[in-house]
Image (cartoon, rainbow, N blue to C red; front, side, top):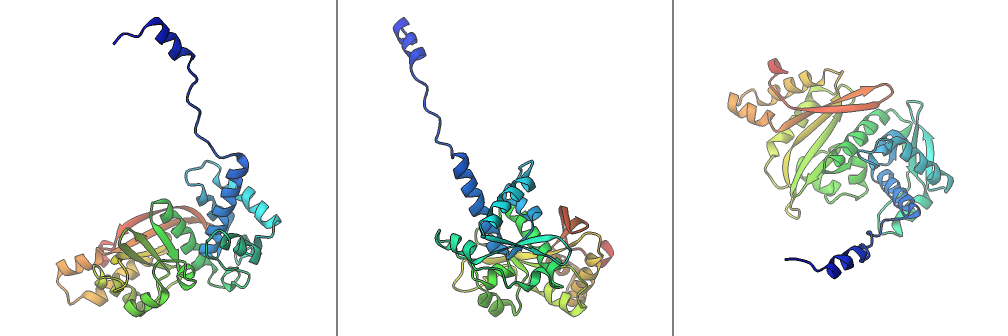
Length: 281
């Protein structure tokens, strides 16, 4: 279809469509503040290196986190605390919790958290950072802190009723749920056997009132430590009476997440591998 000269001229003179309404710099800063407050509320305590995950894929995510955290500390919504590695972790204050609650986001202050400076800091910090990584991969991730404080769609009581133990974290995707355990120190073989036994529940509902079905078990640890061999031996001790095929099926339900770390607890990424029999680990 030919267009007349007047039509061509009209199309050239027509005003272009207005650009979509993009948030202003003030609005973006406010969104960043809420994002950081919500992350700290969900995990209890985080470092700026952890909070960089609030900007997944950003080239200068940690610098953006530092800038946002400075403002939140100045406003009294976050508090800096020295962690047991000599670094700085941030917890939510009462005003910070209130700022989230008025937006309908449940939160409580973390001023009384002993895990920041206590001996369990490494364990909690590694779990927090791994959960942030898995969130960036599209999962919903909830640490034990979130489970205990009622921030997750599954409760502490429901997990205890089903599995007789509390996981260090859970992952959720759709109607599938994974139990996660962090190995930051050597655990007794019997405790590792109990963790491996969780794989026997895969395919079963977590709770009659919930839609979630157990999809597997993650075990997270520093890649420089020899936890994989110990976990495989514990699994063999649990399932040695089963056939080779049955053992392979059960072990295949456990994913080892090896985290590459530099001192002091600097995240360099992680790799995943299904648990294999002792001679193959």
